[in-house]
Length: 189
Length: 272
Image (cartoon, rainbow over all chains, first blue to last red; front, side, top):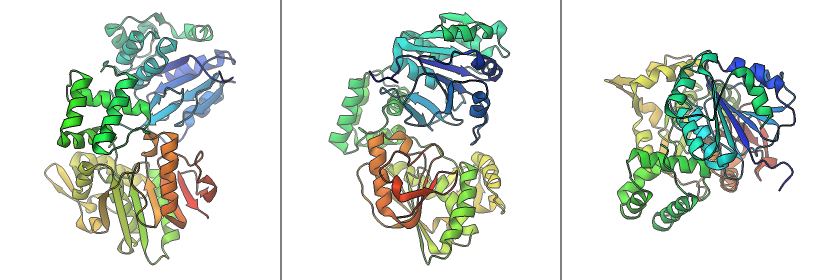
């Protein structure tokens, strides 16, 4: 195995009310995470890279906007660019995709969760946060069926509870966590 | 939606499409391709993978639909306004002194971006000495591109894009509204030649000052990307421009040493 090759992936999906959680979480993450962390957040289409910069300021982990063919590295936070879906290839690289919106969203959380489940199977961890639509639910279901670990933010803790509730309605997540519990959970993976 | 396909099934499908019909998807990015196949199975309500495979093998008319659905045909006019600002302000002025401007738009899909380019050329007073070759693998979408008829409901966001890229004219003067459709003006179509061209198997066919290929390479693996970029390099005049999608790059290709990036948009100038 190459020194930098990875076995596990953690994907966090969120929409309205999730950015605050991410910003307060990243400073608490260990800087030697053995896996990459991929963020898929619904946001306004924009060609600039403010989200990446904002997260960079809060962590010593490497932070970069995901580019197509990027080889996933540990201890790195990859931000899905706005207006592209993000997929994983079998060789642990990233593909971007400009196909139809899914759940009125591009990026779609379902798309990346499913791809994580498909490629990383039991070594995928998918975490769904606050949001106002039903994106992510089917992806979590898929990941769970493929042996991955699924986490949903406690709806009572979410600023917008619709998205976590939609997931819990169709599948049974392995963990339901408050946002304050996320850093420890991720650090322990 | 939660249906699944094995890697073997994907391989079988790719080999059959190549053997029988000559379309080679083996160097397409696998993750996207698999998603497209699953989407197609869902769309046509196939109960099994076999059902899809049989139709692909036996029904030539289905193949055209297959290609159309497997390839991504999502596009819009003036997609990425900043890119078009750069074309307008940085690139076109450099071509203004040329006696003739040849442009290849590879993977043009339903043509929205081809007409965006035609509008820019017209506004720069360059359209009359330009010729745009717009190509795609897919005859079905090329027909739509050639017709230049789009849902009127899309024009609002296209108009916003146009304004965001410093469009000074009345955007609605570039089409005729008819019921729920917008028909692109004939004068914009006159300087465009639409033709099928498969980037995987077809070669260069002319020499150009601009080659546009946006959000096509992201669906190819590195090997195929590199091959296609070599075709572009071969087809581009010295000091010509290569314009890619907002997340595509020459960075890892064999041709990078012949190019300099023009600005922070994904446009490269061929310097040797």
